[in-house]
Image (cartoon, rainbow, N blue to C red; front, side):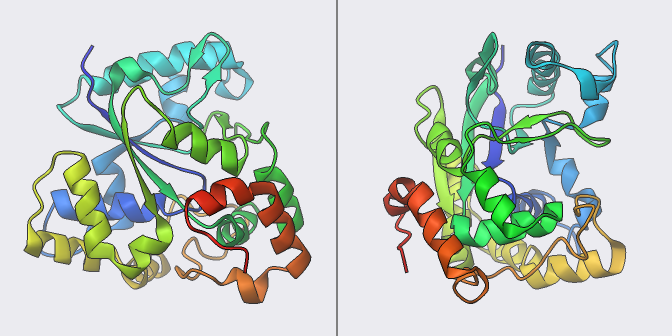
Length: 276
């Protein structure tokens, strides 16, 4: 089997869309920014219901993990033959479910893992799903956390924020680069160049600068305001909320910030997040 899959992995609301927009603009340079509606052209999704519905004799919302794994493996194998490098977006954990691993090493070339301070991420997570931030904080601490199957996607198995990060970062079956959202904000040229080097792509200075500009938060937010975005949550006014870091300090209740630190401090410290 060809090892052609490059995973674009993250916990939800951590910068995955930004990464995909950058890659689309870098590899498909045109006379203007690639619209949000077209960024799927540079990557596949591993959870879109259509791929499973075509292969499943029953409603995709009723598939159990074993059934999902069989259909998923079939879908990913098909993707792996489409070219020498195939980007696949995922929010799934790198974990074993039922009879096998959710991320198949036999098909995988490498992975790009984007992580974000969970105290900022949880605010966007709560907004996306239209739930209280207290409930969101409890969900990202739960090793059983899932995104339930819905009209657009099959079940996605997240686990807690900490187990999600560790599962991807400690993968030994394939090469993984871990990139902090905060570093993407402060030094986008450097971080995106690291990503290109990781996947074996040439780093062309002019194309890099152009792709960084065309995938900036302000550019993406303007596009959504004009044309909408299919990945916006059902309760969200906008998908792109602020695009900043550290907003939790003035927005998150202090006791909840303390709880998130308590729940995830070991992994947070490892990636240079601090308590205050």
